[in-house]
Length: 198
Image 1 (cartoon, rainbow, N blue to C red):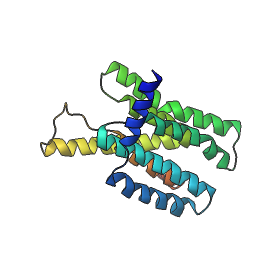
Image 2: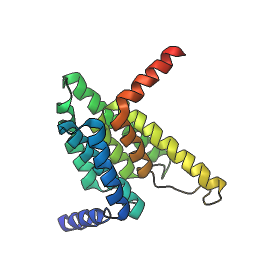
Image 3: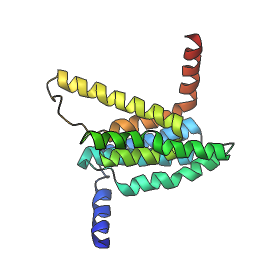
Image 4: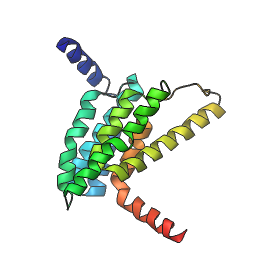
């Protein structure tokens, strides 16, 4: 059993290296440090983004979201919380809620509708939610899923897919999560302004 797990781990990690990974990992490193600054917060953000890129790259290449990378994202979460100005019990609770706010509905949907979401996508959202807290996770998931929907519609219009075709969701989730991990405060403030105007 242990030997099988080791082989799966090696196989999963081998699915990451690709030109797509190296290019976007470099972009992730730059974005994390540029947006969050040349400090510990910027370093942790860059690591998170690179791990997200690894998940997306692996899914694009082999249709796998590696468990080892998802685990590393979850293990990075306490460092993110400790870097916040107020790591109170309420803040920790928001991160715990983040782990379930998207992943649990995805899990329920996958049980009710066979093949709706892959196990790797669900685990990715749980780990990313633990890192990002619930508001940013929810925003990232909505952006990612909407982008995936637009992509699917374009493929159908171009007759490169049909309504039963499946697309790999992790790259789109990673896109949404990356945007909200970098610009959550700005996006949230603008949405608040728009809500007040309506």
